[in-house]
Length: 64
Image (cartoon, rainbow, N blue to C red; front, side, top):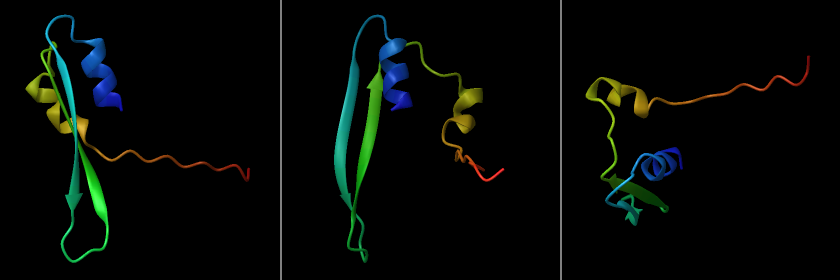
């Protein structure tokens, strides 16, 4: 959702394409959805690419 939102927010001219594909995983009885975003916006500098897909985790400790 963040990539889609940023594509829309930073594309002043041109287009934003969002593609959804259903992917079957062999040997597993489930499917995944692949989301692709393509736009003509300002882009993301190459030095920031590694930060894009780092896992995010959050711990909620409501028992304090």
